[in-house]
Length: 62
Image (cartoon, rainbow, N blue to C red; front, top):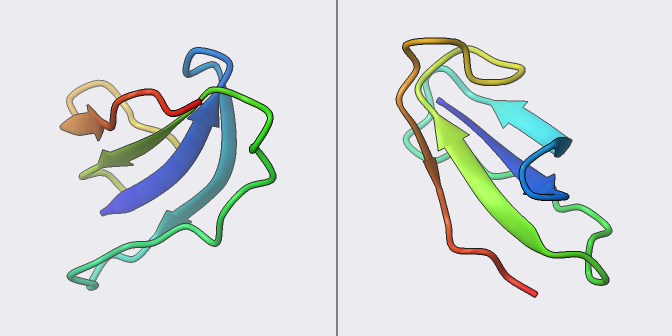
């Protein structure tokens, strides 16, 4: 499982973290208070979802 913070409509990835045996995967956070952000999680091994990975995003936060 992997998690990351995405900005710029999902085009910019910040702080990807993958923990293959963890129940929960957390990013360390990103300096994105002045940007629209989303959290992205997927079932792959990183560093970004590949074709076939199940991926989910949160709503955009401003």
